[in-house]
Image 1 (cartoon, helix red, strand yellow):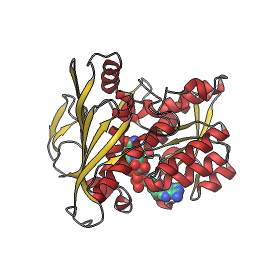
Image 2 (tube, protein in one colour; image 1 turned 180 degrees about the vertical axis):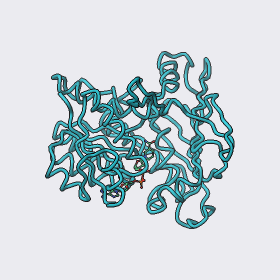
Image 3 (cartoon, rainbow, N blue to C red; image 1 turned 90 degrees about the vertical axis):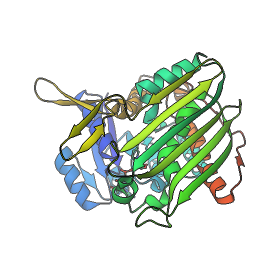
Image 4 (cartoon, helix red, strand yellow; image 1 turned 90 degrees about the horizontal axis):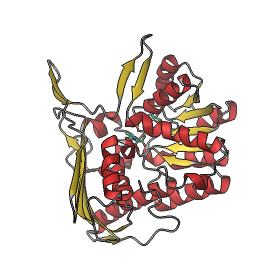
Length: 367
Ligand SMILES: NC(=O)c1ccc[n+]([C@@H]2O[C@H](COP(=O)([O-])OP(=O)(O)OC[C@H]3O[C@@H](n4cnc5c(N)ncnc54)[C@H](O)[C@@H]3O)[C@@H](O)[C@H]2O)c1
């Protein structure tokens, strides 16, 4: 059975799900059924590239073509309404991170998905990075002992907020756009609950966006079992920096430590006109078969393929309960949202924020 999927939002990152579903279509596992995006020029380009029906209004797409599921890659603050609309119509939903910018919005989505018996998954692809999986497995089997402390960093070049999405950077922040990945990753690795959040930050330094958005945010999280992890996130690295993103994570426990540098994996180049570059080939790499057909591999694809695998599992007669704890769920995404929202509350008040235990199933998807 091929799962029919409509993509909503086909911008800079939205091209990635389009490529992933097209590839799964070649394997007979999915049908890339259509694309909705409010930008007519972008729709023209994507129609030319993918040869699929395109729509300026996602509701019209859902009215006119048959779909089992949708994949949403609109700006962060526009995920919720579109995901609710899709769930109301009985679709399974894959959403880019963050699921929503409020705990209440996440809760609304989780409740509707549960009520309608539909899969709600979030594209937290850092969980699919093989180096993170090895680290998570070592933490889970107790190889590091009790986790004491750690740190993570994720820093984009300044072109991301200023040239990729200047129209909605002010609706986001380094915590929402970048930190959220590592809030989820560390929650998942530790299988523990964030209990207290304190944040500091800097703003007003991005040319053209002086007052609008945080430039850098440092989020210090204490977990229920006592570990403390600091997350340093910014989107101010100069254009000359050797990769679009600098990122890594380190945890130290009573019996050992583990560190992943996921920006510099040891592959570097310096080409005329480009300067020094490092390459994260774990995210996406291309391979041509003998007929020239390109196959894309890496955790950027695996995370989206996991959504299709989960739908195949359900179609084979299994239940959502059978999947619990085995994918980045709406509940997991709500936990990450609670940390990002608390970081912003702490930035405003200058005080730490205590997080009460969430309702539902905290820390449900341990590695
Ligand atoms: N998983 C990741 O690592 C990762 C990386 C980058 C971005 N993202 C997420 O992907 C999402 C999109 O980011 P982006 O960089 O592609 O942004 P973008 O601005 O390049 O693309 C967003 C697209 O959504 C379209 N859009 C806006 N409102 C719409 C609506 N109501 N209906 C349909 N389309 C609409 C815009 O026209 C645009 O083409 C964001 O949530 C972002 O946080 C995830």
